[in-house]
Amino acid sequence: MTDILPRLQTLKRLDLDCACFAARSHGYDLNPPVPEEEVARMEEKHGCRFPDEYRRFITELGNGGAGPAYGVFPLGMQDNMRDVGRWEDGYSLVGDLSKPFPLRDTWNLPDDFWAQQPDPTEATTLEEEDRMNEEWEKKLEVQYYATGITDGAIPISHEGCALRNWLVVTGPLAGTVWRDLRADYGGIQPLLNKDGSRMGFNDWYLQWIAQYTQQVEASHAGSRLAEIFSSRLSKLSNPKAAAFAIFCAQALYPNLEAYATAIGFDKQFVLQDRLDEMLWAGLLQQRFELPGECHEMVDSMLGIKHDLAMHLSSTGQKPVPDDAGMKAALYTYIAALAFGFDKGSPQQLLSAVQGAMAAEPLPSAAEAELQWALDQLEGEPSEWATAATVERQRDRAKACAAFLPGRPPETDAPAKQPWWKRWAAAASN
Image 1 (tube, rainbow, N blue to C red):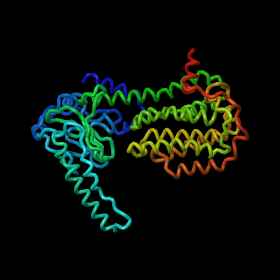
Image 2 (tube, rainbow, N blue to C red; image 1 turned 90 degrees about the vertical axis):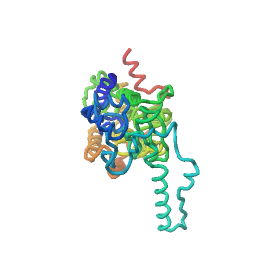
Image 3 (cartoon, rainbow, N blue to C red; image 1 turned 45 degrees about the horizontal axis):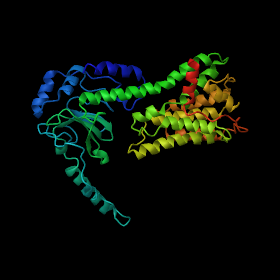
Image 4 (cartoon, rainbow, N blue to C red; image 1 turned 180 degrees about the horizontal axis):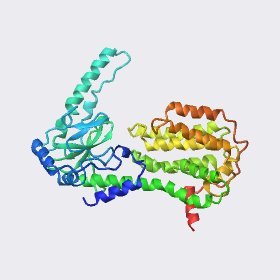
């Protein structure tokens, strides 16, 4: 328990922008602890004894707040649509806490149950389809979402879209944490440590801190890139050129892998390497035909966003305004838009971003268009640019004249390691 608070404070200092998934919902802040007397009253009311790790957490550190996904629920609370509410309010979720938790391992209903799911045809009338769906929903309520399935457990957190984490409080498995995927028809499964043992409350909480800390530290590589750039770019005669180069380096090279991990991407889908490969192959490899117009460059960058959305879909998730990976992809193609309006040599601008050589002063047209793109985002009610904003940027790009008269000079194919890591290593020698 003594490890939790200092590690949480470290994570809060690292992720000042709350860039990790759902961090803005709690800001890494804990609620005030709950009095021991109130916990005892809840235990007496429900005929249970809360596990010691959880009990100490809510009475010594905080009664909910900062925690996995959208945070830890306060005692006696659950997610209720867009807010939290008491167990007794809203839809029935918590079962009989005095009874032992009935599950022993991963659980779901058998295939013959799911075979009953309605599959209307074109000949099915709307009335008949509604009747079939109503009957199916009733079966789900009785056999799949029945509170008896989670007797002896309390909801402690939710991941959005009705996906929850439960803490077993009664029975042989008291103290273990389980993940509820029934909203996606994925059943309920125990959470496991790396050694295969069942996660307890402290394991669950510390694993979240470790995961987010790793993601933030990885994403800070982009910030360290700016620090490395600053010493060399400070020698440029035009400070606007230096600022523009730093911006493009960070926008074109966000640590998408760290962002993607935060929102549940498969770790085998290495976005950082994919982005690196696309940038080098698309911009620097020999005998490559660069797009002749800015909107073509923007369209190629939009492919990254498309890939992110497709992969989210394949993993059962949906891209939403708070997805940091989608935000990073958006900034990526905005940076491409800025590149497109360079009236000088694209190769010179690329060299400036790489920190490889002095750059020409930033063209006023490029500066103006970059500022326009950023103003569009700042005018949005959220971080997620609407389709209308995207279309405005694309239309403006299409109105731009061709920016590349010919092909760039031939260069050697890139090494496998990302360029900024290679350059950072060279700069430190």
